[in-house]
Amino acid sequence: VGDDHAAPAAGSTATAVASGGVEPFHGRHQAGISTPPQLHTHFVALDVTTDERKEVVGLLRRWTRVGATLAAGDRPGAASGGGVDSGEALGLPPARLTVNFGFGPGLFATGGDDRFGLRSVQPWQLVELPPFPGDALESAATGGDLSLHVCADDPQVVFHAVRSLVRAAEGVARVRWAQPGFNETAATEGTPRNLMGFKDGTLNPATTAQLAAAVWVGAEGPDWMTGGTYLVVRRIRMDLAAWDALGVSAQERVIGRHKVSGAPLGAEHEADPLRLSARTAAGDLVIPADAHVRLASPAQNWDSVILRRSYSYANPSTGAAASSGPGPPEPLDAGLLFFSYQRNPRLSFVPIYRKLSANDALRRFTVHTASAIFALPSGVTAPGRWVGAALFA
Ligand code: HEM
Image (cartoon, rainbow, N blue to C red; front, side):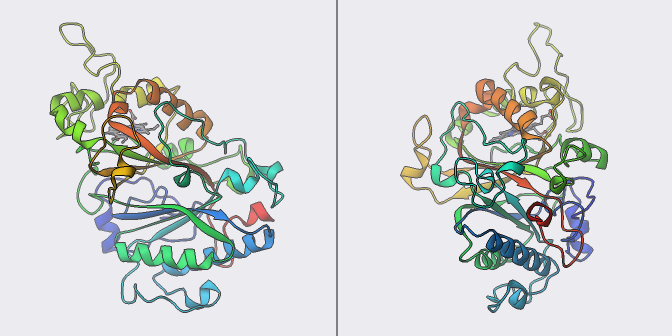
């Protein structure tokens, strides 16, 4: 739900589908953030090609209308400001479609002209991500002035929405990079497994209070961000051949959790707490010093919490695309399409990942190839309003 979804909780999708498969577009927060994850996603970063502020405003109005229409299960056609619906989703239910929109640092003139007069209102939290050790970012798949993020339980519904929204941007913004992804479980029970075979998403802010503390922008503002959040996207390729060669118990020491159950090392159940100071009889840490969950844990990061809502991805592998990272060429370009949402990325994602990129045992098996950050403004509270109106007012 766009408004107060408590959590992307395991097993809740089946209920949502049974209740009609409509996720409200309107609400205090944009949809698709705290919404229980759907099965399919398509993330799109766009560059604005116009210098006219009013054309950007026109696009945001159109996007809002098209997004609301599609989420309700209707066809955009007239709502998109002309053109006929492309038709590929005719007869399909909305499949819990969510659409949200974001503003990258470039819109606020970071590194360029102040074309839209927004430089003075760029939130200090919206910082270009610094380079991290081991990054192998493709410049063509990094950054973007605008983000468009679509999720639904049906891949054709996702594609239809992306196509309709990209078409509505013609002449104002063009696609810079895009990445589809999929999710294993949303429709079954339990936390989804990533392509390394581990449950991913166990420890996440879940209650309304936890989301308010970690995810939604509050009184710190700016006003147009109240109820909004900041999105960090990273496409993280996995060296699956090396991972497979490692064997399960070594994999478990890299992550710090058991593979099958998802329980922390030294515990029995997925929901058991991480006991970071526990030691074996021989005096070794049960959860190793460089284990991913130890280094990412709020207890090791000044209590900084982020909401992770990642998907898996698998791209057609070309030798060239797959060999840009360290080590021998990886035969598959597949891994994690990492999405994190946080109230202040400068105090959460950046320091957490700085620590992980330096010390995490998982780094030997992953390489980051795409990256972007966006401010996702507050939700559109009623029909007739449009996303970002308070910024452009
Ligand atoms: C391919 C890359 C990655 C993989 C395979 C991965 C996998 C996992 C797994 C299996 C868990 C344990 C289950 C859970 O609590 O969800 C976990 C936890 C976590 N990961 Fe990652 N992760 C990756 C990248 C990242 C990145 C880039 C960050 C960013 C800063 C991150 C932050 C976290 C956090 C904060 C936790 C929860 C720790 C806690 O609350 O104690 N992960 N990850």
